[in-house]
Image 1 (cartoon, rainbow, N blue to C red):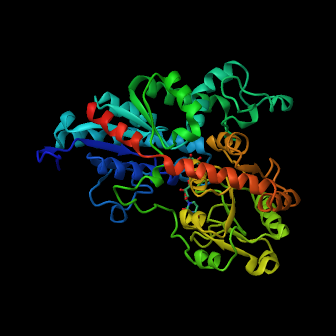
Image 2: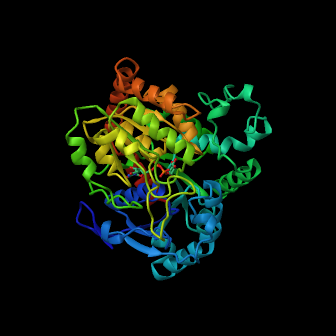
Image 3: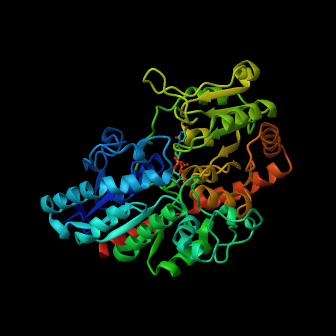
Length: 466
Ligand code: UDX
């Protein structure tokens, strides 16, 4: 592929190879970055797993998609019942050799190292970072979480040695964590039910790969929201860190790729929202991975019913552990008995929503979220305040920033109980605190719109220099 320069000279585009782990929340920012790098003058190849493969027809024709043909993935990698750490470990193991083979044959078929400027790989995929590095390809790590979450992750071995990691005594949970303020012990990255030693060894693999092979870090965040965290990260890593986000806002030179989702979005919810007054509806979604037990699900449902507030709730198949699949089909979990009769038209329930359009709708007043980083950025960019219920990993960190650093949200509470839920929902949707959060959210929205894309230009120049 060639590129015409402003002086009329044609030159071969240098190529970037991207690879993401097959999670919704990782694939979407990776595909957006791919489109932006192409618009910046680079040729782009996206290597991907067969599992959750992106649909090239729905994305940019100018991007090249190549499957890596991993062997069938073990249950631990795909089952909704396995935790995120088990998934990450299994995916790293399954992708290592196929990724290496696919990259090696790409180097053979293309102009080799002269053609391939670098690989931009998922910042949780130490196996791909190592494989690319061993093949002599410069590596950039793409983080789909926040700078604060990455700092927390890299600090885990130090925190463990200093006695800050869970399990820890109840009375120490509110202690601030030195070097990671405003985080308290209870806000640190954790995956309930998984072994602290396993988490440490995963982090050590990521940190080891970053230290050995990585020439820079790319983050879907922006300076105005995480300036001190980015400055600290650059010092700690001694690597360039490009804050190129919010990626979904930056499509001035290229059309945005279609969102990749596990289910078709149910667009009927937009017409339902059209019939509601401005800022009257609570949008509830815990992302694409988080699951809850039947008890928490029922408390959420009856809390929503008891609040009296209109709501749009994403209840996807597999959202409730141990429920859902029936007759071999992916069915959403059954709602509590009597719930639909109770809420009537005050609540709308969908399997999957067109989330970005929902958050941009004027009827939305607040977003009850798990604080996945994509959802948080999408909420910030629409100026929508949040009710937070973090479930695992980086979501704990982000929830603390939403509530205490940026002041644009409040917590549902560690114990999800119908009475407390109803109270929290009423409070966040009412004036007073709710109005103040909305005002601060509006300010963050303006800062997000000002993120100009100059970091993206810097990233493209850096890639050209590799
Ligand atoms: C995961 C982790 O949870 C998250 O913390 C990490 O930073 C990225 O990977 P996920 O749990 O899916 O992602 O949450 P999130 O990052 O919020 O991504 C969910 C995406 O799905 C968002 O872009 C959201 O717009 C989209 N979505 C969700 C829909 O389009 N429709 C829905 O109904 C629900």
